[in-house]
Length: 504
Image (tube, rainbow, N blue to C red; front, top):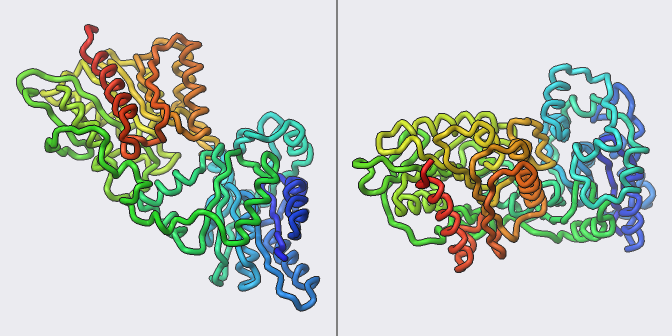
């Protein structure tokens, strides 16, 4: 019989596991929701680890000589005590299940589980491990993770039973002994922005943390819900936990090669374009059409998405998708430009914005470029970088475009910088023309940011034109070479070129 030890996350207790625990037991397993009663000043992660260890020891004692299979399940912060307990009881835990949280590392505090970047920085600077963090108000829970799918009654219960979180649990690092840890399973919650496609893309970028998860024993499940699946999809979560205990789930072992079909950005571009050489200057590459030296030409700067881990190879300007777009632009008589910017983390949008601004200035200074006719074309995670340009609207910026963009920081990112929220800008109106290419098979979390942006644009009377690719996935250029996908790319380019060549 499998014994599930269920460890709650920030501010919460055993009550969040009630329905999931009941379903597990109905299926013949046993469930042990852990009460972390030390929700008081001065408690740290070591004390919570000790409580989970006590639960493991109690299961062993009750087994009377049998060897029960123990699976530790941690939700966000709760995975820290779970991993710590598995480290203290090597060989006694069959698997650790991470529910909507990132991998735990030795010596790293659980402060990273807080979704608010500014709050993390403030608490780290204060360093008061004897204080507590008050739980959020009823209407503030969505800022701590997507509440998609959580019934109102469950959200009421979440708020009513919430307890303060001791800062010692967040600021004092988890220390591991180095004992061999059991296999792991990650439960990804798509409405929080975590999907299997995202994980595979990070792996293909060469992300070291993702590489460490590409082992035979590590599996993943994806749930179409928000940050609290034990409240929004309790029965389905129970099914996933049972499957995880059996070693089931998706593996990353078959995607360790960056050139696998899942890495769409590295597959050939969907259109046939002229094989023309690049001109590399620092962080930018230019693809120049014939005759540009005689008459300056408009330029389109293609801005890659991300985050892309630092040191990833090849860098974005060498991806076939970006090269394909730049050569396509040159085939149409304008200068195509790609660049590498430093969006290496979700907190790096200010750095990436500065890189883009410098690149645009360098492009406009090129004598072969008509400095008064520039378009910026964004892809995927670079969507938030459109906000500064929407607000500034320099006269030479004729058009913005975006393919399958993330138009606001996703719930799990913890980024609150108002400078990178395009919807707030377009709602005020007076923004440049915008061409948005929308993928029909987009993840729900990203689609929600696009819907918010389009609603704000309509309210502000902002000129946004949508080109739909109904059956295409995110990053479709390397994955969908259908006629409809090709036609959509051609139509988007036609509209951008129309803005570049129209009288100003």
